[in-house]
Amino acid sequence: MISVKHLTKYYGEHLAVDDISFEITEGHVYGFLGPNGAGKSTTMNIITGCISATDGTVLIDGHDIFEEPNEAKRLIGYLPEHPPLYMNESPMEYLKFVGEAKGLRGTQLIAQVNEVMEKTGILNVKNRRISALSKGYKQRVGIAQALLGNPKVIILDEPTVGLDPIQIVEIRDLILELGKTHTVIFSSHILSEVQAICDQIVMIARGKLVAFGEPEELQKQLLAPNEIIVTTNAVADDIKELLANIEQITEIETNTTESGYTVAQIKSVHEDIYELSSAVFSVFAKSENVIYEMTLKKGNLEDIFMELSETADAQVLTLTEGEVDEE
Ligand code: ADP
Ligand code: MG
Image (cartoon, rainbow, N blue to C red; front, side):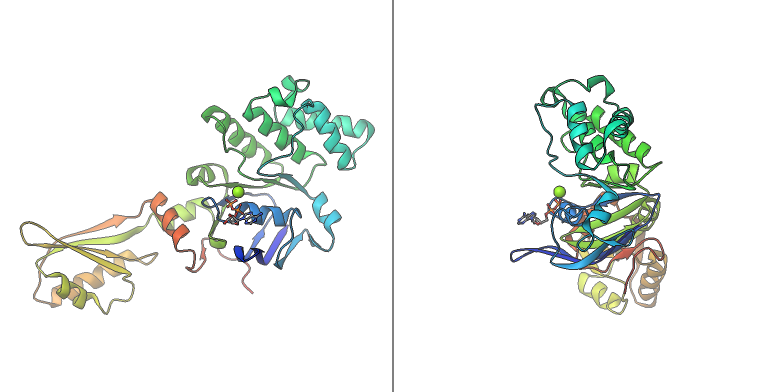
């Protein structure tokens, strides 16, 4: 459906999108997850043909967004971060205007405008001025215009930003509803929101793709224990020496308790923690030292999201087989 290959975008000297590749297949709701400044809007603006890329290709159903923009754009409905709503018009007038721009005319135009107003729940405010609508309703008008022309893919850039909790729930429900009939891509910097709505996560940080896959898989993999805490009589230097040959270990932090024991936090990322714990146990067992206590600590999803965001140079964590097209 959408094939993004080696997408790169520089704003002057600033690298905003750094060699991103992924495939969007039909019938899913994709959540673009990433902290502010990650490159989500830039990526969406390129995919939708609003801005150019510095490098890379975007194919929409086989149509190159730069070479065949008309064919490609017809397949996409887009709600940008700051939608150009005409505040003095009513939703009805505005949607007619957008529909005409998308090539709709006559009874077809009227029928579609009514259909998208019904789908987005704005029929009751269709004749009010857009400026008088709540932010939640304005957002619905923005989503309604994206649906005009019945595009296969709906792309929504941070559709719940600035909404109150009730409006957020309503927009999330609307996205879920749209997901039944369209391929939907929406962006968010809120992990729980992405987990709640989408069935595929595209995690972007510092312009790079850092994870791609199903939320359950992400949760399962990321929530796996990733830290071993050992209380021992060995001193810090001995612990580091003992563990020096275990490759999976990424970090060892030690603290001495008041009673003279050492508590070592042994960290490892996305490895089999049970294998690691048995390796740690066996080196201690072979030494003169005693383990008084050993605990496996589970990672916290929010922490790991932060960590992935900060270590964007790390390899892409692929959570479902064969989804990321690595050439
Ligand atoms: P996100 O939507 O994930 O918050 P953006 O795509 O808006 O991220 O921005 C990615 C990076 O590119 C940020 O560092 C941002 O400051 C920068 N950036 C975005 N738009 C422009 C622009 N028009 N000119 C210069 N830099 C920009
Ligand atoms: Mg943005």
